[in-house]
Image (cartoon, rainbow, N blue to C red; front, side):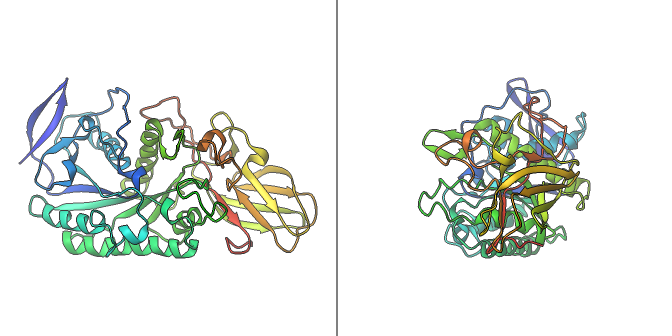
Length: 401
């Protein structure tokens, strides 16, 4: 038997439920975009049904709060609220306890938050808390949500990609040793924009977005919930942190990935629109994509229009783009002004905006996406399209076919 807090009007009532033998947990790690957003005001909605819980301030055995009533929200905590909606299925039967643990710390790079890292409130603290939880109730760690990359922008992308693989390997080994459970958690990542504002120096050197894409191509337990260039930042001097609405919608993208991969056990359907190959023709480049909901389309209702739909090409022959068209449901053809040179370089949503502006209003972006029609739970006017991740093919980056 366990006490669970649920919402009734404006008050809490304690209810006693017989619950499953284990509770599930969702971890968030990374930087401040994942840590919290006190500016969030969630729209009133009848869809929320409670029992998405959190150990307040990470104190195991301390006050457990209903996330709807806890203003210091995280991307993972809103995701777990949406998971509970699916578990409840519209009834008041006993439901799993879903816990969110927040160990994201603003401004920290991988060296700080990794196993053995320098940030005490990240990896090590989570392992300590998870160990303590087992004395209260056996816990399965279902997902690790990573919101990271701004502090690792200038690391070689292959190294940062391999770090992300090692990160999940370390977490999995320690989690399984503590929980004595065979379930291997997935890692859900988002791709930061190629707009470089967090670290204003070395503006032309930016690598980590490529790693956040490629890790989902080389690992069978890393899944992308999409890019962040569609997101509005808070604006003004803060060009990095998400505004309240878009942080909530980001959570919905993560929930969508989790439901597909874990709840529905579907690891073959792509979770994000990302490139598979870029093939050089005589005077064109064909880019084939993984597409969650084919066909591909160019969308400018939400994403502001941009030259060549976000594609940029250069080579030593001085070629430029003459057109960008959809060749079929999963392929884009970038037509060039002449024969491909010996140093081709193709970019998408990559440094093609003004870094002085907010991300979507003027920053690097592209208009390519799939044909998803589902809408946001909290903001029904927003269509949950899967926008193509930013990428770059050329010497030192992804290799052309």
